[in-house]
Amino acid sequence: MSIAPQDGAPAPPPLDTALDPTLSPTPLYPNNRVKRHLSELFRLALPVTIARLGMLIMAVVDTIVVGNYDSAALAYLNIAHAPFTSLMVTGIGLLTGVMVMTSHAKGRDNLMAAGAVWRNAMPYAVLIGIVFTLLTMQSDWLFKITGQPVEITDHAGDLAMILAIGMPAALIYITCAFFLEGLQRPLPGMVLMIAANLVNLVLDYGLVYGAFGLPELGAEGAAWTSSVIRWFMALGLLGYILLMKSHHLYGIRNGFAGWWRGSRDARHLGYAAGASQGMETGAFAAMQLFAGRLGVIAAASYGISMTLLALMFMVALGLASATSVRVGIAYGRRDRPDMALAGWIGLLTTMCVMLALSIPLYLFPDAVAHLFTQDVAVLATTVSVLILMPIIFPTDGGQNAAISALRGAGDKWAPTILHLVSYIFVMIPVGYYLSFILEMGVRGLFWGIAIASLVAVSGLAIRFLIVSSRDIPEHPEQI
Image (tube, rainbow, N blue to C red):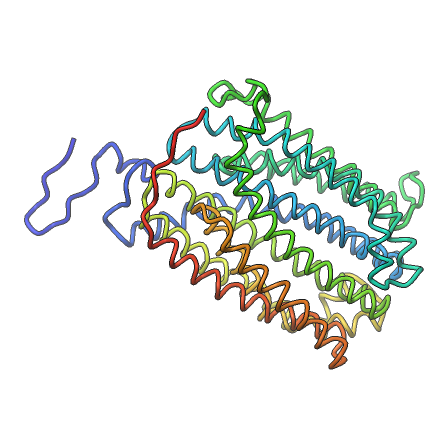
């Protein structure tokens, strides 16, 4: 049904599609389109952000509890997290195709295809988890060849062994969360993450300090808590998906036969994303190891500053994930103008939000640093870094939003190449030069991060401009 427009007036969209913009071509009213995208972006991003923040809040709790327990123990835990986090984030990148392909299927209104994405991804996630667990357990050789002090190498190697136990669980949880987010159903992941943080707070304090009748394990207590909580979250979200009322519409219980062949498109997209995430996180791990070479105080200060950066980055990651889904749905229905608008709104909104979040750290660095440690030397170094956050937050968050928009649009290897240039060929050498040659210490490492993030967001924004100007190809239907 349609309504004839008055002379000179634009025709309104058909009534059956005007009621649901996600089912229609791009609406004809630009202001309404912008408002709709902003509304949908924040509606999806809020629970995703809370879930992402929850992942880092657990790390923040670890840092605060262990940092106040013993500064040396905090340094050991931070160094142990370097290889674990690098591999885990690489795994998350390898699974990015789950969210993207699910959003494409949703854009085509093909629920069975969306369910097939999850079923094919689950065995793949378990396989990656096992391989990365074995690699994490061998972290001590990495600490040795990078010149870490013997004291750090011995303690961090033991902690990495404990963290490795939670690796498969982390990737199972991410697979389930990506699937639900691709369907624009992020609330279960958010609720589970809130519950996990409440358990983590009690268990972390109990095992580190020996409270509530638990053994006093120090940094090992925080590592054990992390692994236990990751399994709690994985089994909880897996159970939700298997038992949700609409499981039959998605074919959730149809088995995993042919998963390798069926996961081809998601894997190929994930290969590029995994390589990109791996290089970025590996580069940050290298910076962590540089901090270790500077000594225990530098390693502790770097760990505190990176925890704050990572905590705020989770806000950017929530907005970026929502951007990827919004772009992916528009891509799935082949609506190029709406896809472009979703990407640019996501990028600009993320940068503005991140700039706003950096202001308190810039204005009150001493008060923020005191939350994590009372060590005077660590405090002084940390304060000198926090005043750089208004530069780092918007650029680092913006590059993540831009690359998420590109993934949502099906772009594979170009973003990976841009990440290679920015974080391997810019951040590592610049950070090393500033820290060791110019003797700027930890501050030099963060200037390297700022410069690399600026290069990344600029290159990725230009790439999205190119990609969003192309016609969208037809998608073969899959079940």
